[in-house]
Length: 507
Image 1 (cartoon, helix red, strand yellow):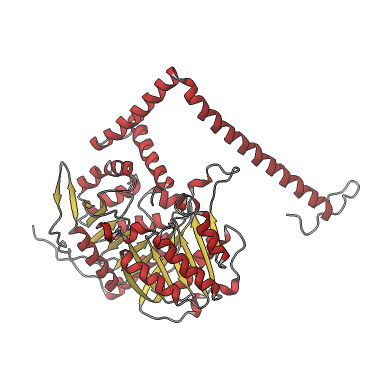
Image 2 (cartoon, one colour):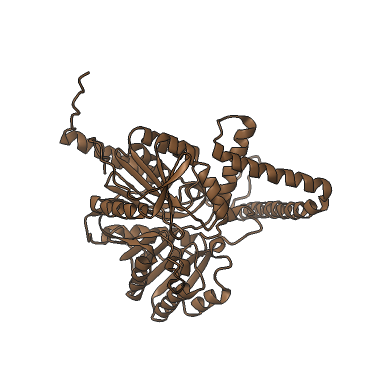
């Protein structure tokens, strides 16, 4: 049978397709594309930390610093010293850290010293009695903005493990960040302002830079995707990219827990001939999560997705590069916790030169990784780029309870599937089923032999929930009573036989 020659689209058709792709990406991410920027790819702490410190040293007006984890160690104190010094010089320094992420990692004295130096410090989402499950929403962002001129979005937290321990021959954690100058820095500043306002007084309006007032400094177009719990902007973007990628889609993720819609999208892309690769840690700071991640490998491998496990120290990067022209760097992991439960910050770059740099970095990472195949391992060295098909290119941590929640959701999914028989279970999921069954059996035996051991936790949880419900009910009633009292003071008295006369304040 004679093969039909593929016809290349006309320039007019290509322009129309690019316009549609641009509109789809903007709507999916909930973030506009911002042209006129300059970007720099930063690998590991050896490139990220010096760039951050240099920018902070140069600050004249403001430093906005937001990170999920900050350690009170040599690295954390180095950053704290710079921020304290700049605050004493009169620079407005503001810091946001996550309560759960930093729990047990930085002392009260660490934060007190910063405040005494003039740094404004806010802690995101500490436990509240009236919101018992609010702790599940975390500020997982990692960013720095200086003077509205320089911005950093990254996967790195602040701690010595990211820098490594050369004296003990321990390599740094593998991670990736990006440095940005240009109009998009205004979007980074506004993302910080939004989360700052959730914890107290907002930033003064005159301190927030206007994107249109920042002069272009380069030719790179990008999007700053600032996601919040239940907004799904980054999830929609990841889904869309997996659907429109035509040649390559190379992913790196620290805590991959495949959910059905995304796994199906990756599998469909691979079956359609897209070179889909997933690089994940070989060892992890959350050991049980590795088994959960591996349980999701079989359907991807069977569809043709190539999966690699990093052989070095912890791989903590969260990146993607597609079709040699689109790339993503930031804080979002490929799991439900990041997509739906956390505040996250990522940058999606549409630039061929930057994407090539990302591809080269990815190939270097694969040379230090092991490829996982069905039934065995094989070392992924050498790993070469697959020849690209001739078809149109698309247009253009540690100890986190939220990640533990992802694991629980994964186990629950497997157990539910086993009970309802709604889908075929993979052999790798048998380990999760065995573990869940063993835990349930242990609880049953404990309840029979030592019921008092289960009584105390039950009483504590019940008391906590009871107090929460009572407190919230009291506050609602009190607020309602105050509102009615206020209406009575501002409203006119009802006329005999007529309607209430409501003042302008009534709504």
